[in-house]
Image (cartoon, rainbow, N blue to C red; front, side, top):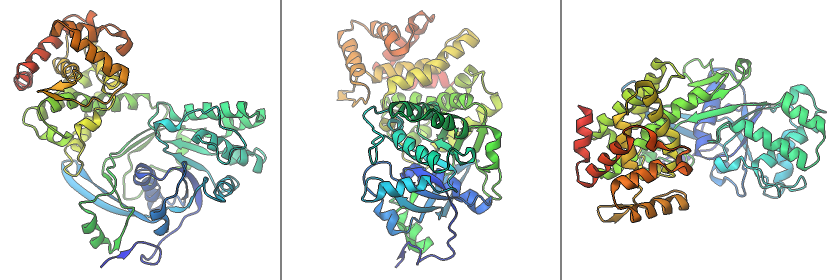
Length: 486
């Protein structure tokens, strides 16, 4: 019988100098940021331990029971081969709970530690928000940016505004320009609370705020494989977290960041972490290729009776259609990034989609599909049309499948659409009141509130999308896909 994981049941644990304060201890941070830190500590002499701050009420009892030790189990397809690996994370030194008795004082004490240099966070997309009811006297204030403002102000005062005591702040929330937005909110709180102008100057000139783009699928606790993993490890790990092998961390910062965050130096584990001057091209690649493939796949896969991404990729027809859509239509629509880099990224994407250990349900991805179509599909439609003067046939099919999916009904069953209530109501009303499929297509494509422009002006698009939806209703979706597959 395996023993519980803690400092007494494993040997040769190395603890590192506490240099990182991390807001959040969820699966993503533990299997992404903390895994990267562990690699750097083991292979690049980074010597950076993490103090983990819970940004919301409550505690992490299982993590505390295990003395902040846990394992990351990674698995997936890499260069056509299945790979799996397990690494114990020893870089989390301790936890701090600002909402618990004495926790706020412990939190503020971190700011006075001279060794602290980095701030990581993942407080969800809603975490980087300005809450005007937050006060400087709150212990703690509700929002993450307000908490961080208090932390930075305490540090500023403790070290009398020393230029070398600023922090490198690397948020990973899925918000465009996340660090820029975070800095703006901190400065808002400085104004709201009447903090002195020199503090604001210190925040802007002596703290590095790094916008980021992150990518790794992390399902969480691997229930099905857990017992086998425990047998191999010799310990039971209640905080075991599984993720895919693939990872990408784009950090917008000066190259000098590598002097302190040496992601280019690990001896054995290559890290796909890039320090770049501008993250925008990488955002385009991720949104148009990875996210675009997902958003194109979802309604088509659903209408074919499929449940998951992997099923869609293994389907004899859809499994060819989606890669062709990306390689033949999306990649040619992008001119901001070199073609070789786009194709390499796309190959990684499809390796990830085929991962047998990741069950990524289509309806889970279908959240807020209308806004995703605007960001992920329509730019490729426009780019391809501008480049070739022709409509991209596969993207037109994906657009038609989306509009039919948003009828909210398929084969007599209700589709549980997960989107803004007004958007769902508008699509329902449009379908209910339409006298033809073409009138629905015209209404949808001309809805400037949804798309920001009128797509009925694109020659042939209304007719093409109408034909797709009529084929779907006639039970000919597979025929349409086979025809374009060639």
